[in-house]
Image 1 (cartoon, rainbow, N blue to C red):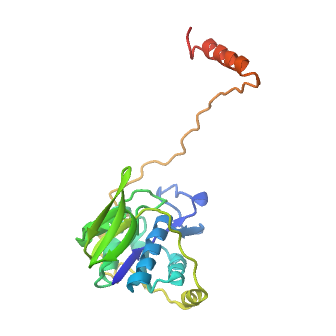
Image 2: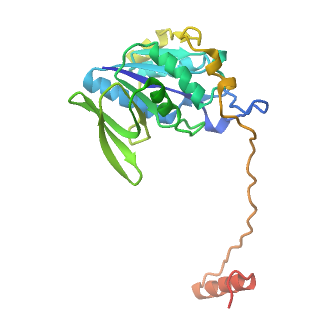
Image 3: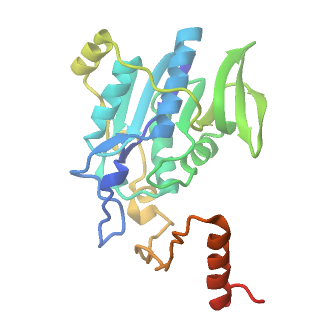
Length: 264
């Protein structure tokens, strides 16, 4: 069984900065973390590796600094990692990103399962995984809580509004993981040594046969026209310090009626 896990490096939410000219996130020089939903996808893949003997390949699209995140995944138990890094894909929206990732996935050969986070915390669109599945022409299951393998099929427990449901799907398939109770495991000393020595292959759009006209900011139909911080409304409040409950209620009712919130 071969599993591909799509990882995204996202800015620390306390350090988000926007380019005022392009209205896109500024990623250079900002502390980054692995997208929390992708952590769930990675841990799910590693559990399947432990139980089914799968091989796990992690991929990402982003600047060179994304190698650190991929090495983190290798330290945790992933077998291989590949990074797509090219100015041609910079500024891609969800559609252009899914096109680029399709080229990267196809370059890896046959696979049984692709795992993605349900959404990225820097965009919260939940679109890339489903779009990737559509480009690849494979079935998809979204919002998964748990993935196991039995009788030649993937068994997936997923969120369904106020309840949950269990579905089965044969590979190759794509599953997006929502955040559940699992926490990403700790890296072993052996894993850290492996990751430290690892050389992450870096691919360009040309290496993958991706038409530059289909990726990047120019090929992105989503255009951000304006970014602003909503004004915080000013709310006047008063605190009633009366300790006697009856007097406090009487004082409250008096204030509410005097301001016409309540009428006699």
